Length: 448
Image 1 (cartoon, rainbow, N blue to C red):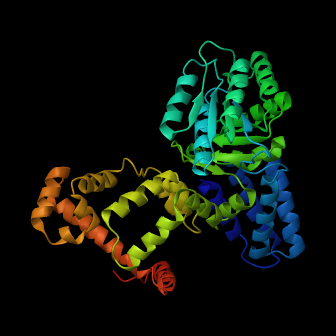
Image 2: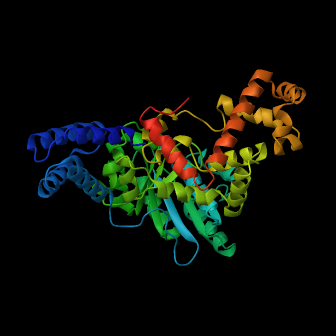
Image 3: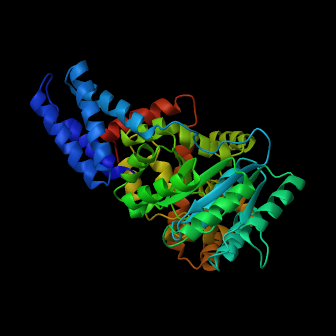
């Protein structure tokens, strides 16, 4: 995410080579203007941003550092709109959220993603199938609910308003923390859609109304969000399909243009691929500084602290085994796409783009490792040393996994090296050693 825009910032900054060089500042601003417009940032937003950056840079004194500070400050101001951030719970449960949007925007899938996000945070969630316009919507939500183990409320042959009222009665009786109502969409905004939404809104009395916008539709997403806000009053936007949007500029302008905060962005096709949109953190990522806070929050939501401490002890003793590996792989999958996670680490934006198509479920290497581990006995999974120098065990495992013994040897070697690496950097001097290694890599001096 944001690679194109982030790269354009870097290119613009490089134009400023000397102090008090107005010509260089103009070149940087022209470079920035071209890149932002090409990335689908609205021309009025671009003009406003560049004017403020120019004024602030000149006021502080032209130079790379001051240009950088001015860009970061004004970018954050553009992204920041008065209102809530992320998911905000009502003072008295259940928190009721109306999910709105046009057909094809990913509204039903996003309802599921939000349900999964809340479930990971130990909330009891009820998803309500109130989209009765699209025949497959109710079934789709039921399937998603089954997949993520979140309850779904639906009624055969009913009307949306009745479904919502009955669902809220059910939620109150069964002490749910959150109710997510999936409403009907249309291929275009029409009077019938708005009248239905107004009736559902009246019945639900929601704490929040989210508009789900497809980032791939560019400025059309902004216009439709503005229309929904005008008609029913939305309190937040969720931008979907952001992983497929190579431009990424809609995220910069949408909140500023309609005066409603961007609350979440969809970063992939899977249920964990939903991120809170917090302006200062996104600004940090746009400036190439990563987003360690969001990464820490994602980690905390899926990794048990007690288990993490036990694993650390194992790694320090060199006792990390195949069962631990599978458990960590499952935890990692719950955190979302690998590309999204890597992009949160400072300076790793380019690496993230290279991982676009890496799938922790379906990559060839992961499938081979899973097949190999499945062919091991429980003792072998817990004690990798039983296999390392035992060719008969390797042959049996290879045959059971449908692999060659050479492939098994390769995976075992990689696993052994990874375990040694983890042990080395888990000690007191580990982080210093890691930093030294990273510095060597930057200068090309890392030994083979």
